[in-house]
Length: 133
Image 1 (tube, rainbow, N blue to C red):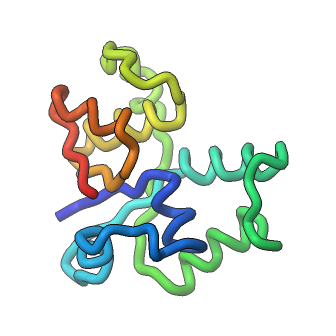
Image 2 (cartoon, rainbow, N blue to C red; image 1 turned 180 degrees about the horizontal axis):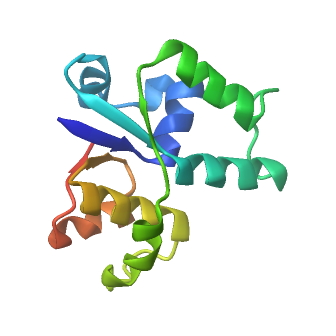
Image 3 (tube, rainbow, N blue to C red; image 1 turned 180 degrees about the vertical axis):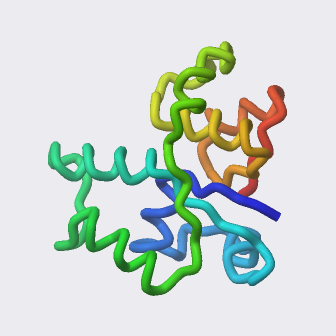
C-alpha cells in the first residue's frame, strides 16, 4: 500500500517516536509499503524553523532530511503544478491550515493513505481521504 506522512508524523518519527501508534509503526516497518514524504512538509518545517516556532534539537531542516534519507527508504513527493492548479477542487474548507490542505489534496489525487493523528484531517474521510492512525 502507499502512504503519505503528515508533517507532525515526520517530526514525531524523528524526535518523539513514542507518540506513534502501534499500527503506524507496523506500516513503517513493512518493506512492501511505499511511504512518501511531501516537499510541502519540509516547506512547512523550514518556515516554522526559520520563524523560531519549531525546535529541531540543534538540527536544521537540511539535517533532518538527510537523516531521513540515510535511515529510511521513503519516497519524495514533489509539489507539482497540477497539485496547485487543481487544488480548488478541494472545495470543503473543513481545515484552515494550508499545508494540511495541500497534503490532503496530494493524498486524494494520488490515492495515498494519509498517516495523521489530526482530527481536522480525519474529517476529510467523507470526501474519500484514507486516514490511518
